[in-house]
Image (cartoon, rainbow, N blue to C red; front, side):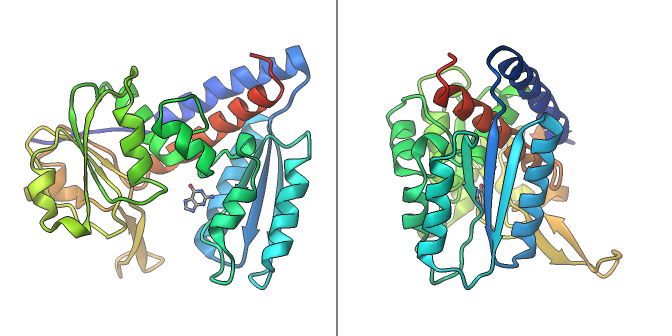
Length: 296
Ligand code: GUN
């Protein structure tokens, strides 16, 4: 079997155009332009590239955006001060502190300092709690993107057994909490497989849908999958490859060549989940702008 490729780039483009339409009417009818503030600390090339891409999406959609770049020597207090300034800025509806932060910074305290109504990453404990108990909230972008990819590619998770591999706060746990909801586009039976549970294949072989988010290059291979399953690969790993110009290439957490022989549908890396994260960030920022200005 050769799997259908789920085109994350095309689905993300569709979501962004929907968001743009809504943002244009918010501007026309209420004079509100969604505004997103980025805080980028240090010189991590991946973080710099992510923030650049997110800023570009803001431009495309006509959002207002500000990026505050600071050296890795910044103090905890200085970061908190920046956040407080954005919390009280009426033109800013979303605040995104790019992670990871330097070791001397307390990441939890930084996230807690963000006004949860502007927490477009969905990392603040208020939003995490609301998600768990099924209240409307700002949802983490990558997990929300995983759900949209499934639904819009015709692979509704309702009634399916989803095995999420990885238990991180950014991906694994929120994917579980989103797909568990008694709501349209969710209602799945969810298992989280992780390094504490021994043989990962024991779980993935029972999955109708596998969401791979372990952060280990090509760890999920075709022989670990049930024939006909759907595979969503959240991983982005750079591996050495002498045959390329740069000497490296990006791969996911799934071994694409073998998995695509077994699965019925699969996301590629790049071009799968990656573009969805940005599209959902734009959607969250629009939602935050609407919530804060009570236009709905
Ligand atoms: N670093 C890696 N992923 C993310 C994300 O989704 N949001 C933020 N703020 N930082 C990240």
